[in-house]
Structure formats: structure tokens, C-alpha cells
Length: 245
Ligand SMILES: Nc1ncnc2c1ncn2[C@@H]1O[C@H](COP(=O)(O)OP(=O)(O)OP(=O)(O)O)[C@@H](O)[C@H]1O
Ligand SMILES: [Mg+2]
Image (cartoon, rainbow, N blue to C red; front, side, top):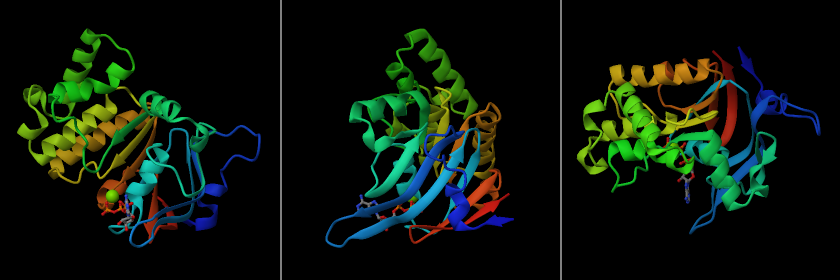
């Protein structure tokens, strides 16, 4: 079953002043990058994520998937349109407020991992808990648990440079999950791992989703996308189709 692009998100967007159970509402979001040549990375994208929903985003390379995730995660601001999370337009928050919002509610798996090079795997995983003020003992225990979940218990003391690409990706996933984020944003989380490891990672996401958290996942793999409740297809910076799975 498919819904029209126009209803994709706007249909469930909050009417002014009325409460909504949407965690994320993107309204007519456009993102352009100015350089030697202006690139329109996203154009008029409207998309809502209801609380506890599980959405996959698919589309060709360069179609705007990472840009969308960065905007929803408050790492970047739209050129036009708004991104509201929990009813707050992210553009109206100060940089400090946005950082706090990210730390408290968002778990982010970056396509390029973004691990801290001088911290060990365990320290990287525990980092979100440092920002949340958890004590050392709890951080250590949680980091150990999460590394075990992604099959890296024996690499806790390794620096990122001492890990393979797929292992780094798994550290990044453990870090994204360590604080039980209300909103998980994952950019190609299984892009660098074998099928078995990919399935294990997806099982972790299922657990987070089943606990009532919201998941937004970018993937090139249809098989992975089908674990979500719906698949948003993007092409040339636009939402072309929203498919219910
Ligand atoms: N910082 C930037 N400056 C200029 N152009 C950018 C920047 N970031 C992204 N773009 C351009 O915006 C478009 C969308 O990029 P984006 O990273 O969102 O694509 P993607 O769908 O995630 O692709 P992939 O599947 O390869 O990861 C691309 O054409 C890219 O070249
Ligand atoms: Mg990308």
C-alpha cells in the first residue's frame, strides 16, 4: 500500500496548537548548499514520525538521505521550512539547547562513524553517558554491555585506528544505543558488516523500537528496510513515495 507524497507527513502533522503524538515533523524542508555550484540536497520535504514509529529511508546515492537525518538530528538547519522535534522548531533553539536536546533524546549512527580517535572503544561508547552526568561505574558497565551486544566485548580497549571498518561501525552503534535514546537516527548502520552482524544490529534496533522508541534508519538494502513499518523513498532531494510494509 502506498500513500501520496503530499499526505506523507503533512496529514499527521499537528494542526496549530493541537497536541500531536508526532516526535518529528518536517514541514516543506529545503536544504541547499552554496559552493562553486548550488546543490539542492532536499526540496520541499514534508515527513512526520509518530511516537514509537519505525521508518526506513531508501534512495540513490546523493538523493539527500544523510542530509535529512542531519536535519532531524539538529546537526544542521534547513534553508527553508521547519524541523520540529517534540513540538519545538529546532531552528528556534540555541546551539547549546540543540546540543542538549541531542544528548538527551537522540542516538545518532553516522555514516562515517565519527568516533573519537584518542578514546578506546569502551570510552567512545560511554561518551553520551558522560554528557548525561552518569557516574563512572555505570558508564563502564553500560559500555561493556553494549559492546558485548554488538559482539565486541574483546575489543573494549582498542582505539578506533586498531579496529576494522565494520568493528568501528559497531562501536558507533553501541554508542548510539547506550543511553536508550527516544529517537534513534541511523545512517547505513549495516553498510560495512556481514549479514550475520547486520542481523544482530537490526535485532538491537527492534528491541529499542519494541520498548516504544522512535527509529529512523537509512539503508540501501531492501531486506533491512523491510524491518521498518514504512519505507520513505527519496530521489533528487524529494520524497517520491511512502510505502507501508
Ligand atoms: N556539506 C555539503 N556541501 C555541499 N554539498 C553537499 C554537502 N553535503 C551534501 N552535499 C550534496 O547534497 C546531496 C545530498 O547529499 P547526502 O549526503 O544527503 O546524500 P545521501 O542520499 O546520503 O547519499 P549516500 O547514499 O551516498 O550517502 C549530494 O548531491 C551531495 O553532494
Ligand atoms: Mg548518506
